[in-house]
Amino acid sequence: MNCGRKKELELLNGFYDGEQCKVACLRGSLGMGKTSLAREFAKDKATLFFTAYETTGKQEISMLGQQLVSETIRANGNKSVNKKNVSKPSSMTEINQLLDEITKRAESGKILVVIDRYTNFAKADSTFNKTLCEYVKSQWKNLPVKLLLIGDAYILMDKYVMSKKAPWKGMIDTDIELKAMDFEDAKTFFDFANPDDQAILYGMTGGIPGQMAKVRDAKASPCEALKVVFGGDPQQATLLPEQIMGSELRELSYYNCLLTAMAKGMNRVNQLSAEVEKPKDVVVPYLNALISIGIVRKQNAITEENNRKKTRYLIVNSNVVFWFKYIVPHMDLYMEGRYEELWDGYIKDDLWDFMQRVFTTISRQYLESESEKGQMPFIIERSGNWWVNDDEAGTTDGFDVVSLGKTEGKSATIFTLCFYDENPVEIAEIKGLIDKTKQLNRDGEVFYVACSNNGFNETAETVASTIKNIILIEMEEMCG
Image (tube, rainbow, N blue to C red; front, top):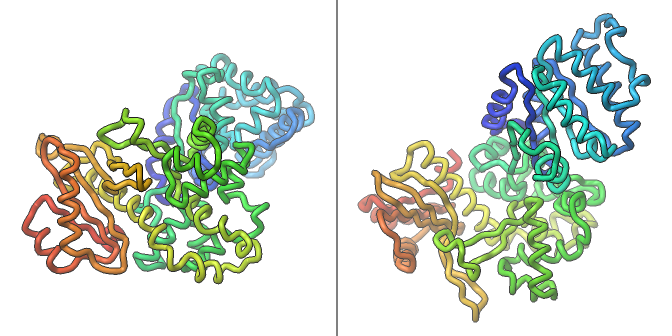
């Protein structure tokens, strides 16, 4: 489960160093592997690992007290423990008693305190969040207590921990937000599949470790992954987009309608307003709510970031796109478990449209990664998009990726088009890329990158080999 989380593990190990009290926050949506990462980090450390339950303050204290005893016994190898030094759970009725017990342990050595699902702990009693914060400031200030708070509810984690009004303001030493994995790391889950299927499986799972693990364990083909990733009782599943949103938002009907429209390719406010039959000033707050929980992102043209006319909204994760593009419109087949009929009738022949977006994401990730490794003739400083709106047709035309950076001390602009197609890319499409760049005049060096899942014809390869600023990248290269 922790494939590809090396950087995050290094950050947590840095947080653990030293003998002073420190606080870390580990955030991310359901299925991102927060708990697995925390347990990997906690190995071979004196740890109190508590998973908060959504209950009353009294029961929360009882459960945490029991966990204190259990961890004491585990730390002593299940040998006889002198329980005079450990308060009984039944005698602990106040949060201060629990925290005083942790203080005693910290006086004898470093202790890692992990509270998973922290928002449940904070909600259980209005005093818990503030009291714990006060202990970090006072009693634990000079003690080796390392406190790790884990949460998947964006809005509530912001309310209790991250916002300016939260008592923890300025006290979080390490803040880690776990996001979906890049393809470079995620493809290790799909080493049983060919490169094209690896990309499709990445798109269907959205790089979410909890979803990818299901596919890996089943060694599922893309068609089989439809059931593996999305199958089961929708009311019980915890990783489906609607269940994730349901833990954060109310009035899901309009959010679902908005996301279905966005999955179809509508990404401008006026388009979305017409689709959901709501005025723009109503649609924008809904979009902002989706942005606040990481479902949607706002995008501006990379060289015109203050141009409000060039603003569009995109679904962040391809797993969510797949759900609203293919499953929601055919909910009858999904609910009846007719997965093969759904795949053959509505997904298979349209998959290229979904995969164009996924392939663009994979290509951007690859370019940035290779640039960071020094394998490209340029260094990418930031990537984005650039496009021109056709208001009459309601369409846009532009590049899949535009990156800004440096090459040999000069500024550089890297224009990228991604071709997810059944046929090799022709020289005419390479020339089309070069001609398109004339719409956006940039100083410095210019590079033209074409990425293809099915390679390039011989003429295109010959031209690219003679012109240093043309770079051709194939899917197999991205898959290593």
